[in-house]
Image 1 (cartoon, rainbow, N blue to C red):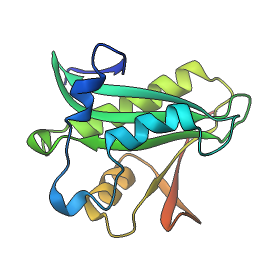
Image 2 (cartoon, rainbow, N blue to C red; image 1 turned 90 degrees about the vertical axis):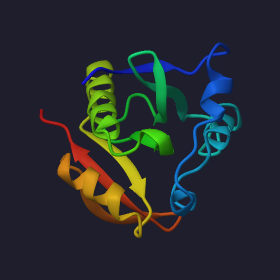
Image 3 (cartoon, rainbow, N blue to C red; image 1 turned 60 degrees about the vertical axis):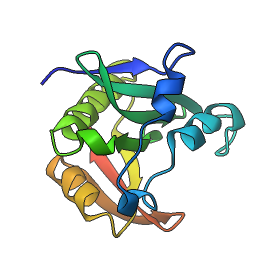
Image 4 (cartoon, helix red, strand yellow; image 1 turned 90 degrees about the horizontal axis):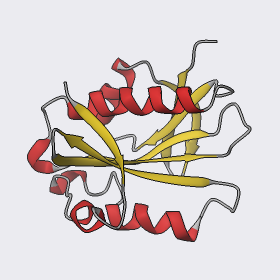
Amino acid sequence: MSIQLRSVTRENWLEALTLQVKEEQKEFVPTVAVSLAKVYIKPDGDGVEYLPFAIYHEDKMVGFMMHAFVEQTSDMYWVNGFLIDVSQQGKGYGKAALRQMIDYITGRFSQCREVRLTVHPHNASALQLYRRLGFVETGEQYDGELVMRFPVAT
């Protein structure tokens, strides 16, 4: 499948703002606008860097995800704000994009030993996807969401 992660820039940010999820998914994931605000606001502290990505299939933007990290750590590499547009769900784009993000993170940060994310406990489709890709629950919670980790082979 031809999926590309491209940085959200001044050329494509307005298009990214139009991405929407199903009505019943809105409680599970922040809007793209909220995710992009985190890049500037840094709600998790000044040491956290945020890299927003648009997900493309060929030349069509189909989704969004952000990578947040604390450099020089082994376990502070996060995927957040991950969504596939309502019109593009069910086509395998989410699975392909998440695999590509894991490859990006582990390729850029050799010290990374795990990639983390959070998921709302009632988001059954996301939980199923993450488990199929090898994410496991840590037993921790963050803001009422389950923390999951993808162990990176050493």
